[in-house]
Amino acid sequence: MKNTTAREATIEVRGLRKRFGSVTAVDGLTFTVEPGQVTGFVGPNGAGKSTTMRAIVGLDAPDEGTALIGGKPYHALRTPLNRVGALLDAGAVHPSRRGRDHLLWLAHSHRIPVRRVDEVLEQVGLTSAAGRRAGGYSLGMQQRLGIAAALLGDPPVLLLDEPVNGLDPEGIRWIRGFLRSLAAEGRAVLVSSHLMSELEDSADHLVVIGRGRVIADTSVRELLAAASGGRVALHTGAREQAMTVLAGAGATVAANGRESLTVTGLDAEHVVQLLAAAAVPFSGVAAHRASLEEAYMELTGDAVEFAAAPGAGAPAAGEASASASEESGDAR
Image 1 (spheres, helix red, strand yellow):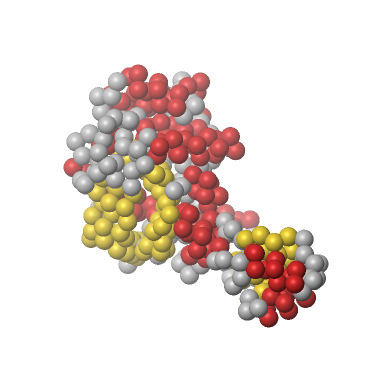
Image 2 (cartoon, rainbow, N blue to C red):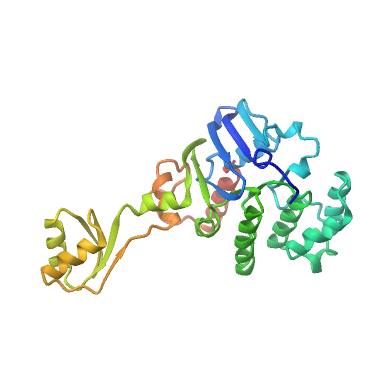
């Protein structure tokens, strides 16, 4: 990556608001994407993620607030492809154009050397498919081509909207390490994703939004620690005895299986001491570590716009397809 200052490799969103008719898509968002880390940008469908990313790169004009890249709005960047790379729609390539030709066209429009085209094709693993027409690419290959286009200008800032979508297991493993390597070079990397398990392995920071507002702006480590909540997982064949002993010591104890308990209010060491003193047999005690998906669900439970009614039966196949299509369209 070219030498840049920390300010140049920073995204700053301040008081961002955007309405579409009577719908408020983004309602006063404020957050910063710092260089040198992967920032996950997550929230339920309709939370405002895509609208925010489009506003950052000048595709949607905000009604209020600012979205700055290196201290400037996108339209003020003299050579935008050299300042910010974005993957917002992997399918936005003419189907009859060959993959390499698509990148050559972009490179020519920004006076980027031709050798850079071959470099990014190799980076994303598309060298062997560069001569094929984009219309014949799988979704995963389209994602790789979109990432190559975003990297073409060697920018200090990257925005990737659902980059894992369509990738096979090898591709998911690749992009996980690839995102970390980009951040390690000092870039600011903003990644929108619905796959919490992938962000747990690649993101350093999370910005969680719901109904157009920031719900959490924190490191992944801090969020997981808060969601874990000092809980202890206990495995015992003497469930009732254990519950009595631990509740008597002031703990909150919940049964989540025939031989499994979750204990809140006591650390693992104290649980072991109490059970041993009362001669209650057990086969496992471990501090509970919440997954990123658990933490996310706890945060966004009240911000989900589209949710099935509890106990509702599965829709017919046609209805399911229509519902999925509508939800995808509303996920702005």
